[in-house]
Length: 80
Image 1 (spheres, one colour):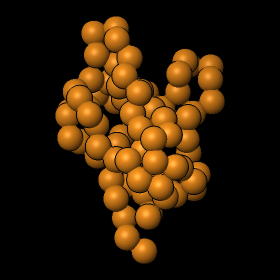
Image 2 (image 1 turned 30 degrees about the vertical axis):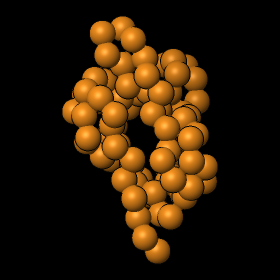
Image 3 (image 1 turned 45 degrees about the vertical axis):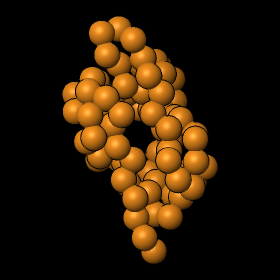
Image 4 (image 1 turned 180 degrees about the vertical axis):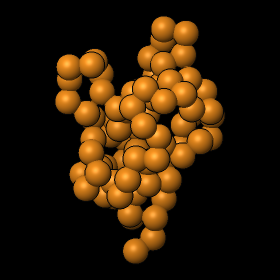
């Protein structure tokens, strides 16, 4: 199977959950559809959704929750 990375659309802090006590948007092994939210990027107190850009299954998250990321940095890997 082919793989595809979901990339950070902008620099900031990556969050896998909407709040500290909420469940993660997605976990390893979850099936995602194109356009589904997999996390958030926070930039100067503004939150931007990160969407899957293909249908697939999440193999792994490369970026950890609350990790600073750069634009274009891989956040997660999908099998497509």
